[in-house]
Image (cartoon, rainbow, N blue to C red):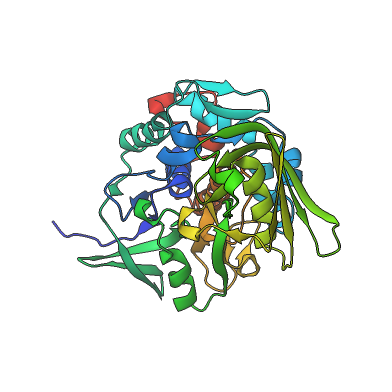
Amino acid sequence: MALKHTPVPLAVVGGGAAGLFAAATAANRSLGCLVMERKARLGAKMLMTANGRCNFTKDVSAARMLAEIGEPTASFARHALSACPPSRIAAAFRSCGVKTKRMADGRLFPASGQAADIVHAFGDLLRDAGVPVLTNCTVAGLQPVKNGFIVATRHFTLWAENVLIATGGISFPKTGSTGDGQRFARELGLRTVPLRAGLTGFETEDSRVRARASRRFENGCARILDAAGKECCASEGEVDCETWGVGGAAVYNCQRWTARHPGPFKAEILFDGLRIVLDSPRARPAKEAIVTIGGVSTDEIDPQTMESRKIPGLFFAGEVLDIDGPTGGFNLSLAFATAHLAAETIAARRAARGGAGPSGGAWSAGRRPERRF
């Protein structure tokens, strides 16, 4: 029997939040897809989020989420989050059997308190849909060719019509986020923004902080003040004391602001009746940050499709892009929504040529035929 060589319609590089959501969307649309992940297991960073509980989105409207995310990300992500808002993300997981729990502030978690429920939902769906998942599979590079791309690994190459880069940033590199996607982009002539820490703590040697190391204070506040003492940013919430300084949601959200704005600044942290002032606050290293700020420049990407403006068929989603949000489910929502948009774009184009199934929304939310979302 003669064998016919055909390309895979979509190769997803990266088996984290964005890559898995894209693959789930592709499966729902009967779009041929495979996932390539450099680590031995999928979703390693998701398993760590919210101390292993996985705050996967927030129960607010897309408009509210965009307002809380702020610029410059909000303008770029508007179309993606409008097409796949938090309600759709939540419905997709529920349709796959994940029971959810809503916190008073709207944050959504698996009801079990286990991030593994989210990762297992992806794994079950992809298994039942017959989507190949290649773990321990590090992609070395991409080469555009006449009818798609050659995706190279150490041991083999494959031919793909479309490629989605969903490799994340550089935070927690042991989970597989080592900057590969940004390197691929540069090698292909796309501009990238320097990578730096987002949503991380500030270092201080203040003895009052060290005396409270390993303690968490729920009703804290952090503020960023400019050289004239004017408030530039403020956030309320948890303040965590560590041997190296202060962290927690209130601090993380203010640090995120400083990462996108030039100083000089002062950071004022209020908790437990104390006022800690940090001149020119120094953030913890990017490898410890919740997210990476920087990445593939959004100027290079069409926000209506998540496709490269320069290289047709090349898509990006999630933290590999220069997009970020505050702590509290925003960054996973951005990853899911941008991935959904990329996969839906590819599926819709193939459907127009008679090559993919009809749209069913985000994982066919609300029904469970053959474990599809």
